[in-house]
Image: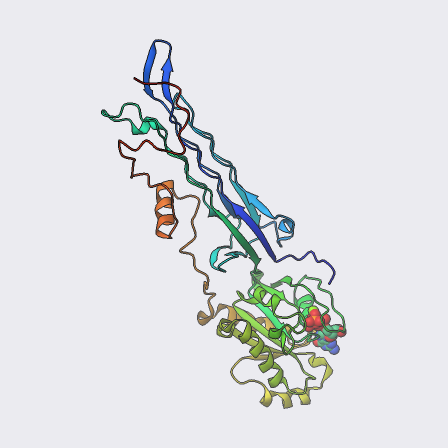
Length: 391
Ligand SMILES: Nc1nc2c(ncn2[C@@H]2O[C@H](COP(=O)(O)OP(=O)(O)OP(=O)(O)O)[C@@H](O)[C@H]2O)c(=O)[nH]1
Ligand SMILES: [Mg+2]
């Protein structure tokens, strides 16, 4: 298939910056031979941050982005100088992007709003300088803390379009025709299967300035869950729609059977799809006369509302919009957040709160800041060069 501009899946290797180490410097100036410890703290490492940006519609700009590395924190210096903080790296993504851990497949976060920021990997904290470890009995500590290590993760970003209504149907069912008839979207329409190769979004305006968003995705065929046709790859774009509009042409031999096949493929992709509200649109009704239309009625699935429409002649389109609007706003059909938010670490939280959350989530810090080394513990790997010999 030709390379498309619609990119909805990227994998990026992310690494936060490690914290700078604290300095173990001992002051030694002219006439102040035993100046005591004056090692400053290391700077904190940069974090890897995901940020929503409504000006992006796909992940195309990240297609060739293989790495996202934040800067390391600078080391502390003598004279209580702090190390420099490392710069964050901010990955901008369209609203509707979900991040997963590529190795475990675990859910990380969901970006749904413009400018929403989520810290994917927090930078390591800087180590404390030896100045913090001075005590009356240990006036010249020759050690300091190393910074916290960097964190790494292979992250998968998946775009799941945020629409209210998703169109589900076999190829050639008239999905794109309907979208072009009731919205300003201009999807490609032709009389052959798989005309639509990537999802299209359209804003459908309803009465009194109200509107809702409709997503047209490529057609599904029997066996799509085994990879036939374009497979079920695009179904994730309707995973979060609150309503699914099934489309079956009026000239189909058995409308109910076609509907069942579609339903079955959806269930194989994700059984939760069946919990969504469904509406059936019998399309291309201009091809058959009214008498035939009324004969179809008894054979339609009984459990969901149906509308007879034609994207070409405009038949039933207003009625369809009425039904969709009613279903979208019915109390039983409020969009439920199926994704978890409790693990999202927001940037606005302060460092202590973040640290506690990360520890609670099982983060493994090499250093416990409360657990300072013993008096006789002077064998540190990360010791800064001590310039002064003490007596
Ligand atoms: N007569 C009539 N023809 C229609 C109607 N809707 C669609 N068609 C025709 O059916 C063919 C397929 O329409 P599309 O809108 O491209 O169908 P689709 O469901 O988007 O198909 P894929 O993108 O391939 O999945 C086109 O030739 C349309 O002109 C309709 O209401 N009446
Ligand atoms: Mg189409």
